[in-house]
Image (cartoon, rainbow, N blue to C red; front, side, top):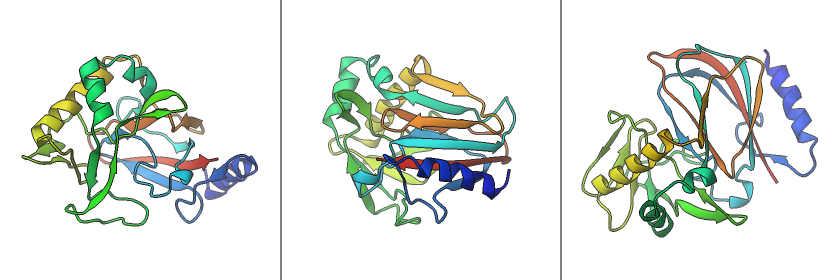
Length: 227
């Protein structure tokens, strides 16, 4: 597929009056042409300083897929997951604010790991539903570390901190959350196929991808829409 194909797709979505394309990237889309490390489950727009343009929908357009055995795409229904959590974990996620340090975003692609980027309550209400607003650290112990104050996420090289919690306590909290995810019906793991268009409601559903053993070619475009 050529860039013209993604342009045609954008023009179709651009014609839907109630939605606008998030101005991310000079062409209104982002192209991903390879995969390697895990893409941890997350909410798009977590670092946005203008909540009005946090994407409501994500459009993934696959033009070159990869092996069926590795790098499966992941979708997590966060309201469904929250319903399965024990009251202690749910209460903790509702009570804390997470501080993110060194988190890359559109206006700062190379922030200092010491710089506080933003704070966010991880469990919130959206249109009457409990939802998560998080970047969930990997279950892979080689990709996370902690000290007295911080949990360090190595894949995207940022740190998180919660006042009153140690780095180890944060790590244990996220490992418990990850364990719920792995055994939950709220998570869907599947292989992306050529020429397919996938639409994700970003308000409720996290997305991510498992890693692969070595860098692999895979071509996909992402469009973000907001009301």
